[in-house]
Image (cartoon, rainbow, N blue to C red):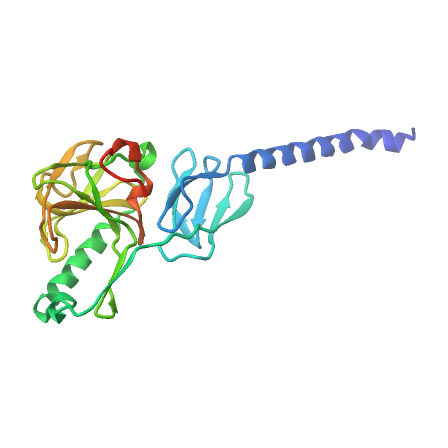
Length: 287
């Protein structure tokens, strides 16, 4: 073998080894990227990336845990893909396209109602706008807490009388969809926090939702509890899983005592029913 070839041979082997190691590491990083949960309209999934990765969802940066977990939500009406962009610790940039499965939502048409049962009177519109402002403000926290990692329990058990995504059309006018899950229970029944969190709103009497409580579980994931008869915690309080935070009522625009439990990831309204174990509520019929 000529000397000039022999001299350069070790460098060739070194380059080959480096290339192999690089490919192996890249493959290893790809293997760490995965998603868990129900990828459906109104659903939320947990993404897993290598620790130290930066993550964006549809061009917006999202928080990640120290071990690389993050949240992705799908709106009720979404039919196209959500793009998740990941910048890995190695500097590699990857994209994943996630398309939610469609769902059928209940639509109810009611005609012949008096107009005051369809549109709120002018005298309360300013109050309604102020309620909405307070709710938006309470959801704006960008807290690195990740109290959602342990999952969610039912805040109480009982029959389900209203579901996420259902919608009424009153006198031909489409109302906003129902954004929560209604759980029937007698007035005064304890309501427990489904996961740890921080109280960001505790309002005794909003126009539509009556006694209203928000608990922030971190990463902009917020539980809302509506129509409460009593609220036992104050804004800024840290609550534990299972802690009693209020009681069931029929305050606001409610036809009877029940809890309306809603969840938001940022501005996206998601279905709490997809995040709980239905076997823990024997009075409920799974949907």
